[in-house]
Image 1 (cartoon, rainbow, N blue to C red):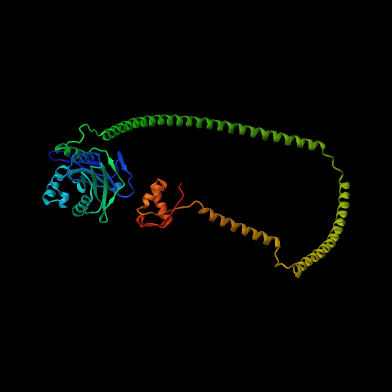
Image 2 (cartoon, one colour):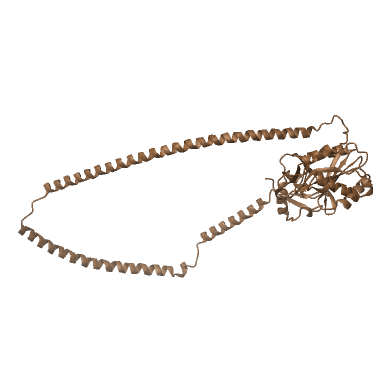
Length: 433
């Protein structure tokens, strides 16, 4: 709740509800959809108005609708009892009473709207029920108007919303705890009815406010702890960076040392290789045989040339004969292969019987595997038969205790509207995960 000031004689607060309150107490089990939030001072004021009632009492509920993130909620932070008598019996509120109400709202609850009403009755009966419905239709027939009923004899409270021209009972609502100077000042200025129990203490409210104070103190301690942790993390980060830079410098020095050693070792290896080549050349020179005379060398060269020429001629002739023999053999082998391929007994269109059996077996196994997979998909599915008075939200809560499964059930059953179920319908329930 955001508060701004509007100056006059006294400071006035304009309430805006863009987010849901954090400090709340849940009454009943509110279902998804329109949410009702009652400020705890309003609850206290209603108890004071109804506790001594001998006749039905009508109280107007004031507040605003939420916006942005809280657009699905109505926030009731003000209440005002009507002094007009026998409103239920008459079935309406006089115009003079409405004029007084609007003037009081402008003075005590600036920019608040009449978003519903509360009624406390000494004893509930069919006559009272018809009177309540008649007053609702006449004075509070706009969509989503709230009705808070209090049966004093049974000490039972119920809350309704006017939707689609009828009262829809809500399964729960929220009581929230925040600063509410408007309602506090109004309660101090108005005459408070006496309590039925003089020793009554609202221990729930006191304990809740105590919890809120403890949460605020815990929040401050956590903020301080988070600040200290951030400082320590910063110091550790600086130390780590310094260590990393130092390690990087050392690694660079080691790389330079390794490069120097590698270069030195390479030069030594080159020197050793040069010395080895020089020693080999010296050894070859010592072992060299003196050359023969020029005449002996010429005679030997001529004889060698003749022998080489004769051997080359014989080799060429023998090579031609061998090539002819190899060519005829290759031609014969090619012909036999062609005859074998074109033979009717060994036709190329025939396929091995083993390959066909293997393919058929593989196809059969694949079909069987797919059939087994389809069967296992729906093996764990359950269903539920809708009974009279059931709603989809109630079924979800009873089966899963988790209202987020409503979307999954709607999707599994093809339901677009949660109110479209009917008695005797079989609803598929997805597995709980």
